[in-house]
Image (cartoon, rainbow, N blue to C red; front, side, top):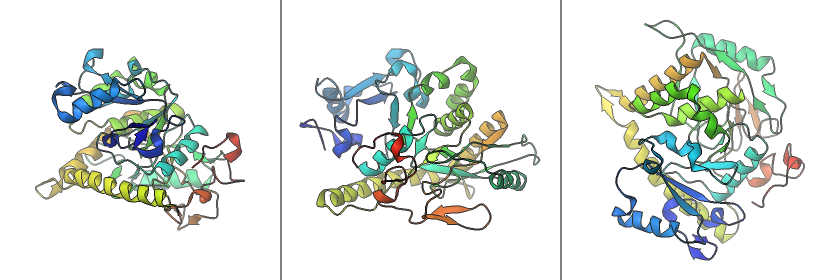
Length: 350
């Protein structure tokens, strides 16, 4: 991959044309480690890139800013990003196809008060909450936006000793419809949320993230953004149909290989067992129930990218899906000519 004619380290994942000067203003690596970054070969390569005048990389050292080792540091206002649109990636990815991410950027531009993500999770609600959620959907909980989004929340009663409401964290699929949270990789969020996330009012929640075994910054940030905006996250497809040109097909192959390596590493967490039970999944589920219980509600879930189009599939009750799951660019409503929301602003070339 290249940046402005200079070699660009592919270890960042955001390679190819995503590193073009007309799209990416800067790349910020947030370094939380206690060890010096230049003590390894990879670290030295990154430091060397960061000092090049014509390279977009800069390194934010959390320790120098007086911050502890905390995943929430990547949302800290002292980073002072130059762009209003922040695109996040975990250090191990996965890093999505350039065209898919650009379609997500176009979605966020039209809905900059919410998260727009590709890796989204949904929660399985208990019988009482699910019944109330379906009532909300039946009574028009979809805002007729461009594209539409959902803006209502289901109340939750505290769970204790087998009574009250409990949600299950569904880590088996990435949701397009009914997503309640967005994982960081490939997710856009507005720069202004940094100040909200680090406001003194949320100090106890940040302490919760630091003290919890899974350090659940992802679900915490998604929950806070939803509570502040009053809306569910929005989703975009993380993969599009391959292009016909060789360059696009080669890009798809590189992305698939990188995604496979990243998912293989993540699967190790979910395969950890203790007395026949998934430890990581169980503890993550405990974390989201703590957050839902703290705020006393959960959003009703996202509308899919295909909402209101011919690609929306209506299933039983309020259940919906998008067909195909991997669309071509001209199927995405906020990008195609005449599609809903396209004329709000001029899309970048995808």
